Image 1 (cartoon, rainbow, N blue to C red):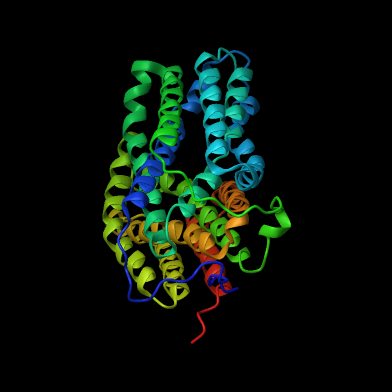
Image 2 (cartoon, rainbow, N blue to C red; image 1 turned 90 degrees about the horizontal axis):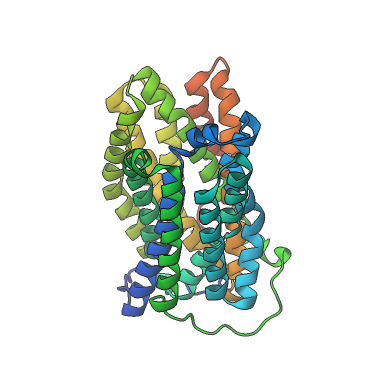
Length: 400
């Protein structure tokens, strides 16, 4: 597989590195804020939601698990339709509808008094599956030459949301409870609507075309991106299944202190990420830079499999892991947006988001039995390294 762009948009000159134009900068920061605010709400619930489910009337282990996963369920099912609708009806109205659903689900969560209402809240929140349309709108509003940089800033905003949530959730829950956090989510959704309407520039008009179909987005030039994001999120979810166990077990770091390690390695990973992004923008063969990023991911996970019991070596491995992940998380949607024609871009990015959620679900499902086997954490991290190796072998080097 060779994920070079198909010619849908011109590839930038290898030596050119244009600046973001004012309109692009305005779109980028507004859409980054929308993406980050939405993700912050989800991340805020992760450390506290499972405990909250135990306190609600009618809760059973099965229903508690369903409440925890309800959001991802409707996200997976509706990413494709939302992407296709954004191609047909426009990005802005579809994103606005998704934010309304997210706000409504958050309000239901704040008012929930039993486990059934909490499940409904998660399903309604997840029904606002706007990852594809938001990314497509950013692609519509940025030139190909700056798109990887723009996607990297989106990725950094998500990473920042994750770090902030690790700090804020344990502080907020004792003071306002999980219901209070749901009200914060509803407020964030309302602020996102205002940003979308008042700040995000209007996208350029696209030529009228027949509604995009799944088949139109499932073409050979785009498939490598779908498989790549599936592999990347498989690896991410499996790695984060094992990391808390490594930190809390082999290294005896309490759960309440583990955020310091995540913050440290995330900060250390930013400097090596930047050169990869700049090199991609300047390279005539960006696929080779991407292959280097995949190789770095593979090596970091292989190292982690045998070095997780040493704190210093674990931090080095995680720095490499996050540097590779941050770069690839930016490069894959940027490359897809270059390869996909504008008339199917929303559909393609919706399929891309579906593959993202499927990869995350599969990584978690497979990591559990592996950890419970005789291989333990070596198996979990080693499996991630093997998945990265398979991905690397599947991506052909650029033609000379």
